[in-house]
Image (tube, rainbow, N blue to C red; front, side, top):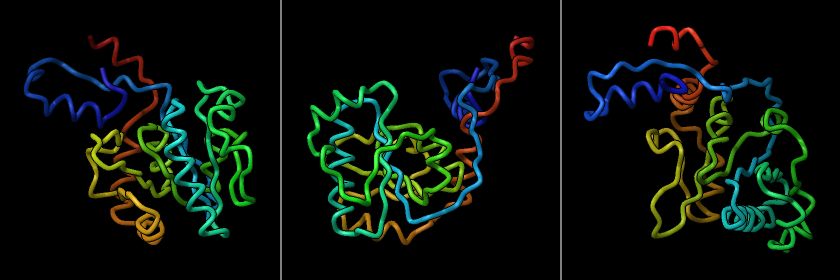
Length: 196
């Protein structure tokens, strides 16, 4: 059973499971589409680890200082306690005026965002399904943790601020990416269980 057609296609193309019946069950994480009021906002989506927050927030803060008209929204993963995070990342104590910590739902943040800066967070799938341009921040000499690894031709990977600012101008493969992400998680269909 898979969360959506993307997973079903992956199973059907895996030689080790050929001949085994597979169906789309869906997921409680099915994509919510939002009415967008697209602004010059970059949503920053770290995973639920302090190290990932450090990598993304430090990079985004550096970009925010260079481009004060560009707004950044930092989303803290729900498993992270914000007070503890601030003690471990003092850089969050004094944020510039164009950076804010989200207190909203993901859907509300998506409403205002044009770009999503991310690494391993699967929240980027919901962002991209809503037409938000994903920008993957690579670290040198690392294995990719990009949840959109299958569609690297349809989104941008960067390693520097120069590349980041160039990426803000690109929308390569956006319609293909939106379609792919909308098929990643689909609504639950319990009738799939009856066929088993």
